[in-house]
Length: 259
Image (cartoon, rainbow, N blue to C red; front, side):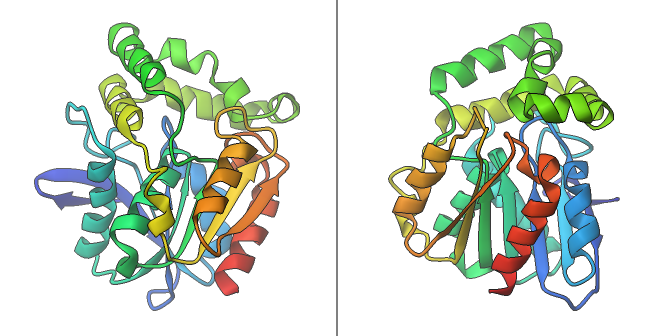
């Protein structure tokens, strides 16, 4: 775990794997940290230079008062890679991280080798819903959100079979900075790339969870229809498919990166 200062703001990141290997950048979902990618870091750091970080407002990264914007979150990725001397990279983001990936595909294609967007959509949810959630956590803290998250993140079978994994993630969500979380909700409320993702020309893999109630298979299909030449994979999982179906996720990602 390391930190880097960019424009007087601190970002927490980790970098694993051979120094001269191709860079694979992972971007976390709302309410999690870079640690959500543990199984991917372990798997891919044998052959890739794996970079993961805490998104603004999360973990040990900067938690300045928002609202944040999707452009700001996307530029954070560009600033981090520039500061670390990384010219090009493949990017894999889940949920909010997947929206950041789409933004990069539109606005910084010259930086991307390949793009993987997981359990996400060109517009996630509705503006009113995100505004309500931001107001809720600013007034009552993270508990109201954390209390219902296990059922959104995972299937019931996974929750029952893996209580330690689930409880650790939910505890992490409870500890998330409320203002940082709410400020990311502000960004998600305004983010709408439905009319722009057709501009993405980077080779793209779209991953969906077959049981995801948040960003559905239909959302993934809509992205695939707009992004020419994109590939599609459905996994037997809910919203955090990289955790619930880690082995299948890793194999799908590896095949795409090598293809």
